[in-house]
Length: 382
Image (cartoon, rainbow, N blue to C red; front, side, top):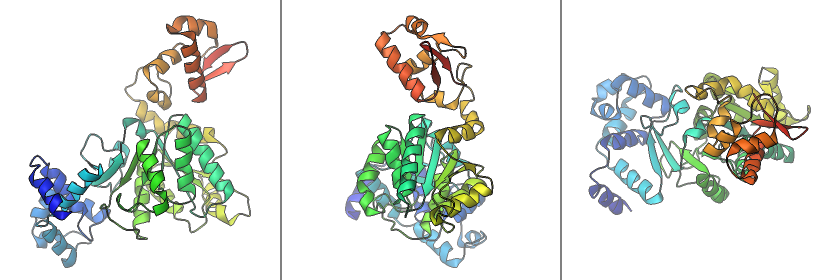
């Protein structure tokens, strides 16, 4: 494998040296998100980090002789070339923080990943995303609520973000997929080492309808410390975080803390008042999280947060969800004013077959952008 990898790089001299330097820095043992960010703040670029002498590296808080030696050794290693070749073989993209395709919201957190390993595709519409997280040992009620909320939010045009873990995470991904929506899974392991292993097929489905991402090397195994670290990415990709079933020591509460630090909205689904599985949810509701009964509670809570995404859009767009419409859907929507209008008038002005116009009206109603009224009339939801 390593001989093939080196041959690949030798035969591909166009490989971006900045990409290799960023990947090389992400592979250095002991350099986590905060130390990497401190190094980049001091030295500017990954290549400058490798060009720096050990004495200057050790001036960075958290960098001792061992980590400095690892950085120097990595500068002379071919591990990054080997990793890049494997990514190409596996169909995995590498997205740097400076790349146009890097999620804008994630780039604004205090310690963003320098490199994202991505299987699938991140799209601009994923800026409208909601994270759904919770217990791995969830109840039937929790699983049902996660699937229901994920499906409803996906039908409203939001991307569902979660961690591919057992329990609530898996239910959220499946709910989005069953609704025909997009979903993003953020792993704490490498993309060549899906965890838990029984979610391999789910990861493939997620990649086909969204993306599976990680910041750690391909073969990274499941280590406890990596999961709280990846939770900041789950929050960072999202406008808000919804917690469905979390005990007081649940890892989902790490995601809540990251969300609060990043200025994201926090939502929680209540359980039975005597349910140990929902104690964490009840605590954060008491402390100010938005209580969730249905998807509308989340959509209303996200209104102010989603507004910046609409900047620069003409006056015909009233909500962030409208950015996700195709041309035909937007054209039909613009025929529906705030005041009720007869469906016959819409069909007459649509300029397409009545059956297609009626089908589009149904889609817009399901996305809660218009409302059907008595007397075969429609009005726009603001």
